[in-house]
Length: 95
Image 1 (cartoon, helix red, strand yellow):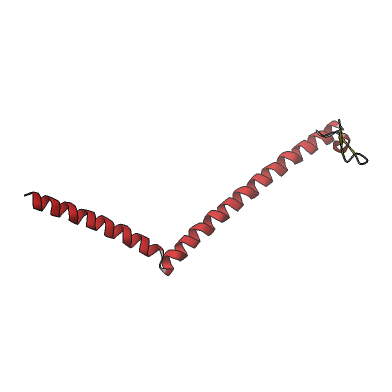
Image 2 (spheres, one colour):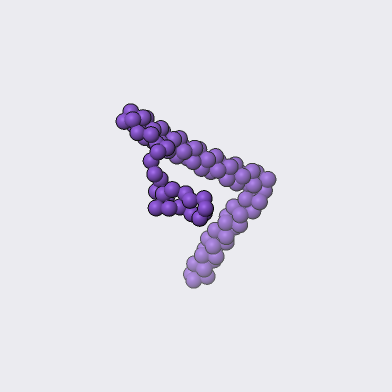
């Protein structure tokens, strides 16, 4: 009875190892490489689209800030930035 049990365990492990090896081998076939490249390219395209959406959101936010400043009569280029004025003689920013 023990021999039949261990034979069944061995067959089950053998089947699992064979299936795992077949999946790994399929990844190195031309179709597997093409699928991997397609998935990678799809992820890259998605990342670029997300980046473009983030840039567009930032542009819209900045445009709203510019419109609000214009409506209030504030000149944006006259505001002192967070670094202060640049002193060319010293080559640094003054606060």
